[in-house]
Figure 1 (tube, rainbow, N blue to C red):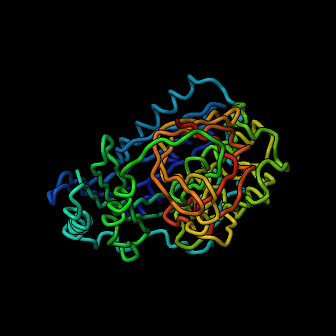
Figure 2 (figure 1 turned 45 degrees about the vertical axis):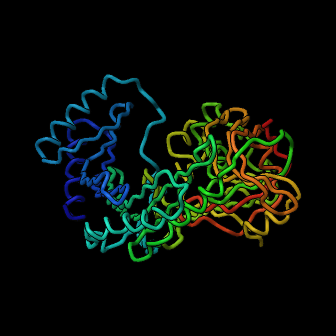
Length: 438
């Protein structure tokens, strides 16, 4: 189905809902393609391919709201589907806060080209995908007698969507991703250390096609001899690709649904210094080739570049239309785009060299954070640092504390940004973190 055909069908579905009793309607039609290849011992272990299309509709009927989705896209099927959905909606409780957004806040076209789609997505041949997975595994397979297993995979996906609403919004998005992942496990005494490494990109031509196997093997071998060390309070460096685990609770606490439901440790904190002045964070939806770049959000609200934290001062929540009405606050957006840290001038090696005694965290194993209080406990893997050098691998240790305290104790923010994610986290040094071990 072409983009024009999607628009035509979406508008027809919207009008059919209006003609059958809905006062407001939002319709999206999306299609996706994906494939993956997993190999083990130079044999294909799994090969998958999927092509999907669906229509999603949000209905506002007599002060009541419901959302529905179907993969049956013939008009006669859609018509019956919508009519039943409207009748079902009439049995729900009224919710005065459920409406479409203010049309003035919609994206109205004319935004920059964000380069989020590889227009040659379909040109990658199946054999190329298999070869990439095979080659990634071959980089590690048989390279060390301590290897227990190696597995590699190639994956890609492409998504396209159009959306229309009954109060004037029309917009479409498209994005793609390509990736390679390799995981290696090795003998290490009673333990079985394992490590993985991935590379990904928006376009196939930009995909780093070698190195995942080699890096995964190196990381697994470095873990041999992992053990607990003594408990204590010391500096912690979190690698850039692991930052999301401790960054996620901070961002979740900014979500309007969490705030309205009293499940956030950042309630009523706008304009206040809540974390270290070393944290300046910007949400930038307009980065060309950014993983989270977009011109409008899931409701059609036009995206804007916003400062989230300015030298530790909280500047913005993530507020959609529904919770904005409930909280009597202007909507911003229901979710993040590209989160950009103001970085320092040190790479990971230089951060390590600055620590007299501490731990470099390279992985998290279980644990949780209380959304209401910010109290957390996480299991960690990593390396002990002494006098600026890594001296031994550690595991089966926990960190405990409070998110606001942790983020108020930033020692330094590195410059090694992880560009494979929309959350562009650098390596971060935190002071005075409580570790429990022996």
